Length: 325
Image (cartoon, rainbow, N blue to C red; front, side, top):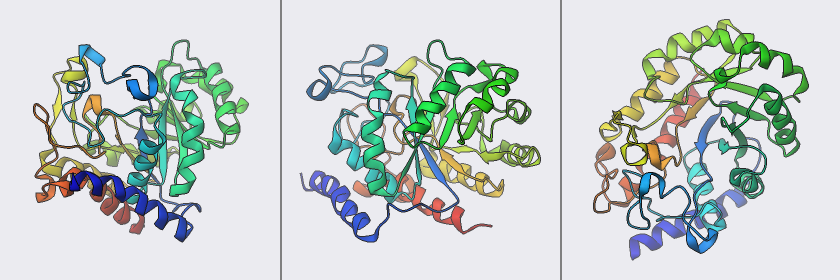
């Protein structure tokens, strides 16, 4: 019980510290951005479980992840959960929350205003991660960008951008307001021809740190921003049957990817992810539970320190990133 109380009180204390130091001001120029998912639900807040049940799982004890959240099977619509999560990100040295967005009228769109209202209290800006929603075209995304910019969003990341031809993107770029547009693609030439402003990788299995130097060099020569994606590991079998695994190696995987991003002279570092529990890429605090993996042993830490270890390590790497030239 004492351990749980400490976990719940930590974000409250941090929020007070943020308010007293005026941390709502613009963050450092060298951005650490993190991919965030606001799609979770539970009966108490939403009438039913959302996402936790994927692939036939039965919450609250049985969920679609190899890890179990310290906050339990939460709802992303719970303002207390959102406040704790934003406090986590601030403590981890994150500047930008890149929220998964599935188009106008989706649940992720309906929950966007709450995130936009709360994030500045923790010194965070909000970006949109435009997913491949049904009927997505270059023209629809151009209209989306107008809508999102009207809400105050200035960075837009487009997942799997190559589903749409480069010529289609280029044709609508002038219809978009002044935002930074990032393409998730391994092909820098595609992003250049499509008139994107930058590139990112997101997938930490297919795109390891070993490609970052070449990737960023190509991006810089093309005049694009380079935002390679780092992550702690990957395991998605419970969610979708994917047998691929990228082991965490007690934190060594995360360190290796961060080190590669810094050596590649990244302009931004994107983190996959804060809370994609189904793919096991999350750095949100997890707790040991029967039948689930845990963070115990990461960087030699145990107990609550291990549960929050990836947040602390993100802060460490963020400081190193911002101190490099």
